[in-house]
Image: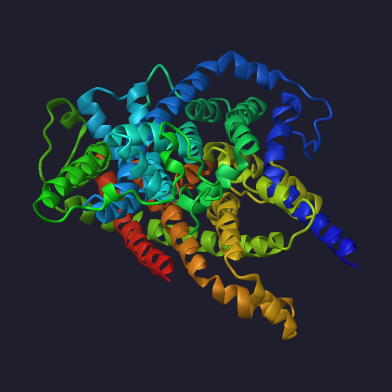
Length: 272
Length: 333
């Protein structure tokens, strides 16, 4: 009795998932469609006559953009970890005065719309001369991840037994040494979670890139796609090929780190 | 809400020697009474704040200062000349008055409300239905649920471009299906009555995974004996949902909806890529309006743009504060 019922549910589940993922299938399908068949009506629902012309265009034109995004993503990860992990250790284990207030501010900070931050940064970066530079973009992108990072790290580090910390102190370790050699290694999972999200958000950022890096030599991939859309609207198979390539980090993330992703969503509940 | 990865048994690693394995609290952590106590506490506080200092400096320089500059900007008449000589006359609330009296204000207000409200309504109900569906264990449930996360992880710009092409009037797959059913094509992105609908559809699609994951984790928190009791009392599926699941899920639902509000209010990428807020103002929200004023045209109007942004932030803060209150109540209970 039970087995056939659960098969029925699996079939429904597969259909629902298929419907949900249809836009992604469509992106891949269009990226493989011959340019002269893009305007066909009705369109080809399967890549019957696939072409990789779109992808060779990506390799030819978009590699610098991809490189920039990679650099910005890695920089954002490092900055986010460096700022958020020590603070979280203190919030979780050292009982600082004003810790609750700081937590509150971090929650609020996540809610500021990006466009407002972008405008403030535009003026400040203009004064500092870091408009259109990679360090400027890293600084701006890190604001997407730092509050999230502190909250995730704090949630995790609170669970570390106090005995472990005091044992290290008895062995003569300073607070810094305890943090580096005891707490950080244990917190490996949350380091992975925070790094993954910081990278993904920096990689996906468009609003900071399009305001703070409008005229730079090195622009991220989101601007690369945006330029494509603006310039040659006919070339949708190249646009979709770029979109597929830009989605690779998300796909990799899901495959290698699915449980961290789900944990990150539920714990921080950030990003729209 | 559930803390991440609390499952691992926290193995005692690192340079702690064998001491970590003993469960007993070492006597040295007991604070000595009397005069020695105060300086030690001071030192502890100093150490704690040394760890926190970077993030505090960071928050001041990269949050508070940009926000301050933004408020300052909105109270001045900032022009291209201001970039060069650094001066801009103080005009008080003039920018806010201009913005509120602008012909864009009413459509932007309505569009922001409709976009946010309709998006959340559908994201939440679809997410809830899916969470309940996936919660019944069946073959592949975990894998399929993981696949549902994909739209949420894609760069927004990618999702928006895909939807823009799918909804293209002449060559989009959506219109191909509609025409296949014998109906007329719809100018999704270029007609005033459909532009807002189009961006809402795309935004709902992006938001479903988030709602699904949070509500699913909420379902995991409901004790299974409640379901057993309901089943013993002869409740059917629908009764179980409305009498057991839904009431118990109310705190998690409140958090999901409020977070959804805060994040939907600031949606920018999707609308900008798909319609740029057009045609005319048909899909212009506050976030889009602010961007268009500041960065969209040839001559940047940064001061009015900042004023629009600050109006948006006030709304976001109100919902944000409600969220924090609700969340704290949930954590306490």
